[in-house]
Length: 554
Image (cartoon, rainbow, N blue to C red; front, side):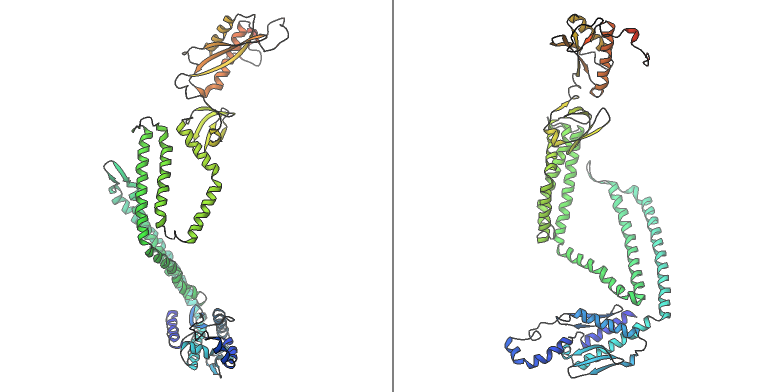
């Protein structure tokens, strides 16, 4: 019903024209006639020059009745809105009858009135712009207004609104049933396709190199099934919304505009795609080539990292970071090649956004770039690897991860220390694990013993303490150095070998315990670097006092 009335009014508008000028045209008419010579001297009018004012539609309940024009002081949009408001007010007033709608002519305009009140005014300038007689245009407008008021009142009758509500309820139930059916159909169709075709789906490969895995092919098939069912559901929802919105006069405008709201962006996108289709084809092919090129490069470096492919002195540990560098270079080159083919790349907006991103990146990436370069530098220098026990600055711990930006350490106290790679590059790094794998790590500790004790006895006691310490290597053999002849004592250094750098704190503790036990057994006093006089009795712990409370024998 609404679409038929809309078509009727469009035909009336095509016959009679729709746009009019407003009261300002009347006010300007008399001065224009009085000052015709001055106007002629000043130049042609806007109408003579071909400047046609813009028009705006008069819309009631979403249906366009006709269009009107305006002037700068009274724009067409405002004039159309005022006419639409007056028509709705007259339609809401039951005292205004359709028979009271008349056209009242005057010298320079015709007024369309309802119960003696003005609805709209048609001027000579309106008719002149539409190339029709002013009375003809006025009668056409009056007919459109009469039909609009009649339709406005009929659409709001209680019986019609009740019928529309019942139909909308039925449409809602039908939509719900359809969506449930579509969901069931999607599950049933997917299960049937999976049962029949999943085992037959094969990957795309050339010789032993697999370009596309079977899982990806199956994902594409299921995505197509899901897309089809989703499209059916969306079309059903669209038709439902349009039907329900068109059923009520207050939402009819949304219903009529729904198609344009949906089709407008799609049409715009389609026009853009058609215009840039050759470039899009090139970009699609280019992206596929780059994608599979990167995949081939990754497979190569994975093989290098696994040791199946050797490159002379190229360490397998370098494979992962080198792949990242090569990937970055390939992607940078791809961006340079693809940039001219990106839709909108030559517009000022695109260039402005690119410049803004470049400035932000350059301002905020100095530390980022520094850490990344430091990470690559440490990788190729083979400073350390995951699992190594290292000392970086004041921190000692096991390397958990050695990334491009930061290195994570786990200390013997089970603390996580995160060190930026740029700091590591400028600091001293002690790696306890590198040579421990080959010849063992040398652990050492010192004691001060008085000159009255034979050095041979001291070295023998230190070697005895080392032999009692479990976890140390027997070969190479431990050795003792005399590092200093002090004023009051000789400094001895015991050196032992270990292949477990991660156990250094426990090994040192065990070695120190055994040194104390051995020196106490032989009654030799461990001295401090400075003392004033010899004590009456040596400062040693007697064997019977080794397990004083609360200590217990092991």
